[in-house]
Image (tube, rainbow, N blue to C red):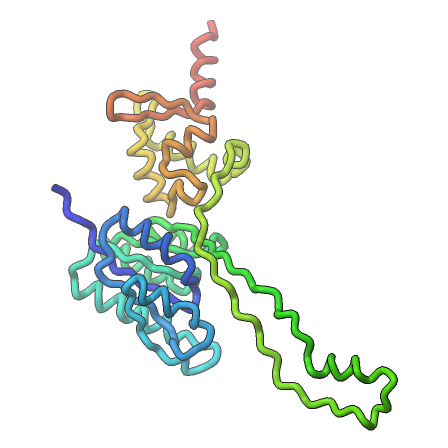
Length: 285
């Protein structure tokens, strides 16, 4: 019986959304068990107010780190230090880093250098340096909406309406306090939409990556899908889920650029471009 992968989940709350937690924990449940769950930030900041319920509901330990300056990265430093403590303490097979901040690139590289799997979770626009430093990087684009302001007339507006036909000297307008920004409504992260075959074929980087992977693992004109998957993970922080597909087979099938052959428990793939070239060679006199 295979042992369960032990994962340390570290969350950069300043650069992540609480709405993505269900997705993150769901993916980690498929990979192993997150024995350590910690979120770092200055929890006195109103910016992190939306995290409270999520921390309680998911048994995540908040790690307090006061922001010494308005633009400081004290929370990042605390997260890196604890990651090193956990690494040297042993007992883990992988780390999950939840952030869209490329400053964690050296941390991801250091952990991988110590033979740790590193699973990154962040927004799609996260810099490639951090994405590719991870073993696998999952796109988690949180959806936030700001509700329309309450339709309430201010005292000043009410006063201005009363001004009509009234001498200004008899109208007293009281000074207003600072405007209060509406509280964001955080919606649960939705599964990424599945890209169509045309969209996948139009993604030149993806097509080249898949074709290079099949070419590099070619055995007698065919590539075992397991070998292709290993190549992709080692070459890039690749996962089919970022394109809306549960596995590599579904993604490759959708591109309509590869021929698949199933033999018992083995699935082999061959680029239709390669197949066409070989067919032409065979028909030549």
